[in-house]
Each structure stands twice: as C-alpha cells, then as structure tokens.
Image (cartoon, rainbow, N blue to C red; front, side, top):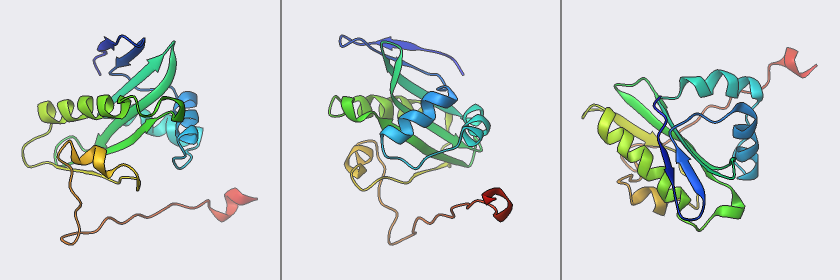
Length: 151
C-alpha cells in the first residue's frame, strides 16, 4: 500500500497506512466500537485493501479501512475518530480518502457496503451511501468464544 502524507494547518498528518495492532485496538475502544483482540487485529489488518490514518504528534486519532475481495465486494470498516478530536471534519477526511480509493480501484459493478453506527449515516450519505432497506437488510453473525476458550 503506497504511503501518502498529507499534513494540515492543525498539525494532523493523514497517511495511507495500516495502523499498528495496539493503537488500532486502543482507538476502537476509545471510540466505543466493538473491541477486537490483538490476535484478530494481527490477522485482519494486513489484509486491508486500503487503510488511511490521521495522526497528531504521532498519535493515531482517526482511521478508516476497506476490506473485501478486491473485485466484487468491498466493505468500509473501522471508521473512527477519537472523541477528543470529533467535530473537526476528520471523519470527512477519512471518507474522502476512502471514496477516492474506491473510485480509482473498484470495478464499476463492485458492491460497496458498510454498517453505520446510529449517529453517522449523515456522514456516509455525503459520499453516496444510502440505506439498503427495504430492498435488502443488513445482518450480522457474531462469533462467540468457544467453550474450550472460556476455561
């Protein structure tokens, strides 16, 4: 993944990069996203099709990723902005980078999806995302700890 750096007047630096496992897990927790284990992050992060981060003084304060098969299906995931840095258009900057990557790399028949938290649909609609209901409905399967893992 090419690394592009884009500084802004506020000192934030946006890059096309995959965040580290520890900082990824920490930012998800701070943003009240579902927690991920280090093992899950170690497996999943390297499989990103695209990832963008925003840092302030080296600290990860915002991120977003695209995962999928690279042809038919793409999913926007992990869009997160640290609570101390919200309302500064960082989510917009993350989505601009994601949209640009999709426009440049996804085939015209690709399906791009995301699951939005209840407070964020307005952000995503500015980038062309629309609710799928009633034509379709989002569903999820959550993997639980195996019985042997709980002992």
